[in-house]
Amino acid sequence: MVFSAEGDLWTVPIAGGLARRLTTHLEEESFPSISPDGKTVLFSANYEGLTEVYTIPINGGLTHRWTYESDAYIAITWTRTSDIVYATWAYIKNTDDQLIKINRHSKIKFLYL
Image 1 (cartoon, rainbow, N blue to C red):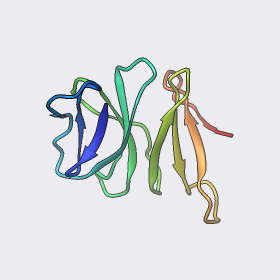
Image 2: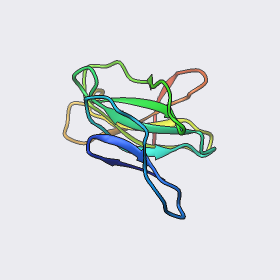
Image 3: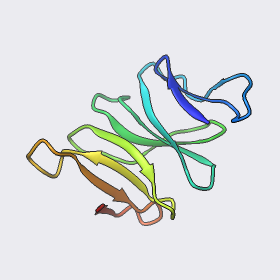
Image 4: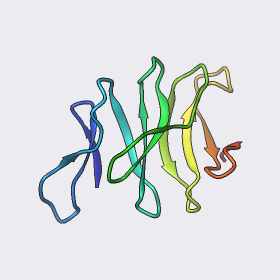
């Protein structure tokens, strides 16, 4: 299980036990979601100003930034094929968020319906 507390991401076995800090950045990480294969965590963070979408290996390591736009992005979930789904207001001008899917292999973005 992965959860957000004290501005960082933490992991803990489903059976219980001690939580282990996954991130230690000074900025806040939130909205964690574990990939279907259990190897990667999707999350949002505001490392460089606006909230962007990142991934990190479930056992820790380097983060990978997936969005480089001009608006806030909120990590939502994974598809069954391990594509990333996030919410944004960058592509529309009303108050409704729009879901976007990123194919992790080709890095192509699609409107997610």
